[in-house]
Amino acid sequence: MIDFSKYPAEPFRIKSVEPVAMISREERLKVAKEAGYNTFLINSKDVYIDLLTDSGTNAMSDRQWGGMMIGDEAYAGSRNFHHLQEVVQKHFGFKYIVPTHQGRGAENLLSQIAIKPGQFVPGNMYFTTTRYHQERNGGIFVDIIRDEAHDATLDIPFKVISTWRSSRELSTKKVLKMWLMYALPLR
Ligand SMILES: Cc1ncc(COP(=O)(O)O)c(C=O)c1O
Image (cartoon, rainbow, N blue to C red; front, side, top):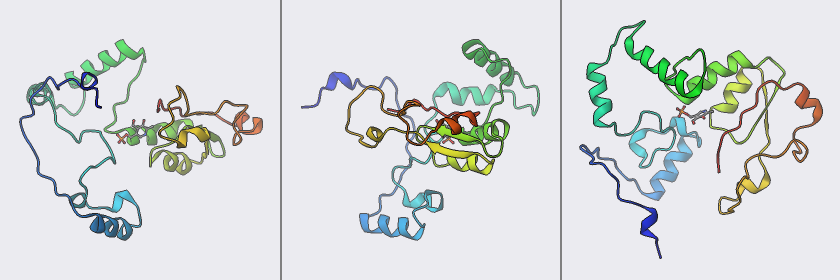
């Protein structure tokens, strides 16, 4: 029995809809195989639910659309950048901020800055691009996820990362050569 009190009605109206096609299971399998199981090589017309990214792909609020109209589009020094900077500094306390269009863009910059060739980069799971960016910048990716994390049905509070001691992958030698560590708050 579904407990509907856990799923309150959404407090907004959606003002536009975009049609999407749903192809058959056989066609989906064919498309995936033809793309070599690489999600970046699949055409969006063949995708019904697209989980490749959630950055900037969904509906914007009326305030966001309004903000675009009154926004300062200057190439440099725009007042919207200063507003963003102030808000990030207020909430996160960082002195400098570098806006990026997506998580994987940020990941690329961070990997270039933080990784020196030959360093180990432990991480708990990774996005499709995370390992690529780390290795492209000379890092050696080490997955330190706990075995339990592979069981999506298991309800334990923290299952994504091994402790240093219990990690089979991460010897002290590797830790000493480590500079950057990725820890994503996944459940
Ligand atoms: C480390 C890291 N890489 C990549 C992503 C994916 O973001 P995007 O789809 O914006 O590239 C995320 C998103 O949270 C992330 O935390």
